[in-house]
Length: 89
Image 1 (cartoon, rainbow, N blue to C red):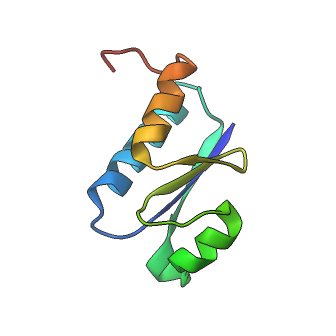
Image 2: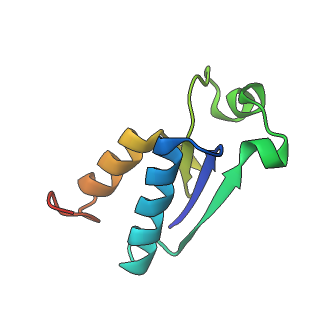
């Protein structure tokens, strides 16, 4: 499974999502990830809305194997639901 995280600089939830992806990659739960800085890449929330198909109010926006998962909280729950993480992790 490959994860793509769309985020922006100085966003605490973006930092947490990237750290979680690094942890999952290190544990072998995902094959890799890419962090996309939306400011650096010139991607707007409107651009993401077209891809996701609904309004985007916050970042990060996270995709697992091209399927939209949501933000950090949803990504964290997604990993826990698949037992990629334990409750203490």
